[in-house]
Each structure stands twice: as C-alpha cells, then as structure tokens.
Amino acid sequence: MSVAVPAGFLPSYHRIPSLGYRILAGAARLVLLLIALVGVPAASLAYLDSLGISLPVPIPTVVAAGVAIAVLSTVRAIARPTRAYGPLSVATSAVTIAYLLVLRLASPYRLAAPSHSLAISVGYATFLDLVLLVPALALVSGIVTTVEDARSPGERLPYDYPA
Image (cartoon, rainbow, N blue to C red; front, side, top):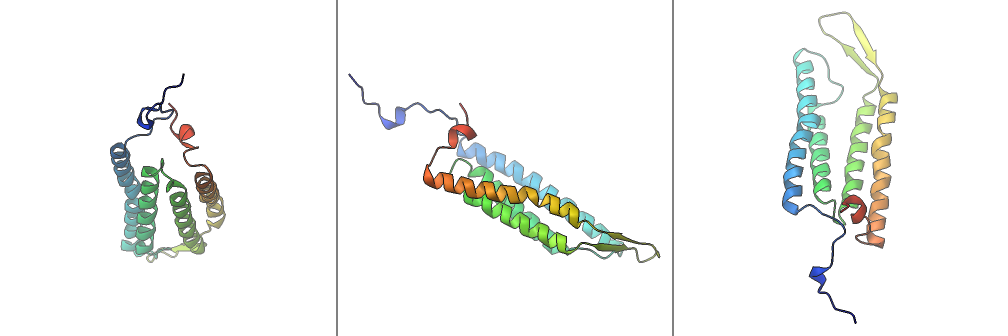
C-alpha cells in the first residue's frame, strides 16, 4: 500500500538559507567588498596624487571596476541556490579578468616623485599573470555550473547546502 505525499511535505535533504538571510549576509559582504575594492585603493591613489606622484591607473577606473566586481559578487552570493548563480559567476569572473588586464597594461610603472631625482621602475606583470589564474578558473567553474544547472536543475544543491 502506498500513500501519496503532497509535494510540500517531501523531506528536504538540503538546508537553503532564506532569501532574507542571504540578502542580509550579502549586504554585509557588499560593504566589506566596497571598502576593500573601492575605498582603500581609491584613497591610496588619491593620497599618491596629492603628493604629485603620477597614477598608474585613473581613480574612476578603480572605482568603477571595484563597484562592478563587488556588486556582481554580492548578487552572485545571494543567487547561489538559483540557476542564475552560474551566469553571475561567469559575469563576475569576466569583469575581474578585464580589470586585471587593464592593470596589467599599466605595468611596468615608473614611480617618480616630483621633488626627488629618484625614480623606481616597478614591473608587476608577472604577478598579475599569476593572479589572473584565479578568475580564469572561476570563469571555467561558472561555465560548468551553468551547463550543469541547465542539464539537471537542483543537482548541486545537496553539495552546496548539506543537511
């Protein structure tokens, strides 16, 4: 004898945080990311500019890229249990890669103080090449997640949110 169980009463094998909790955590994440990706770099560049040191990257570029990466990363974190997570991961990684490539174009940078005859040439292209590996792997992961979510929706939820 089998008993029909209404769909709302099926046992859940994963605990997905509520939307309100994810938004609250996302807001905290957004504030921290804005401080780290916008506030600190923009303040540092503004300080260098006030000393008369030429900037390797314009401040509006740093602010725009930092805001874009912070907002996309936050929206991606909020959308994690949905099918939008994969495409948002791809978008976040693509924006991060584009920003790092813009920074890479500024290398080598010649740091020259206007009141001194000392000039330091800083080449950080190799470092940025290594840093670019992280968003490149995240881009591939986002593509795989997008394909997996399209092929079998909900399959990753027990792994992302174990009971």
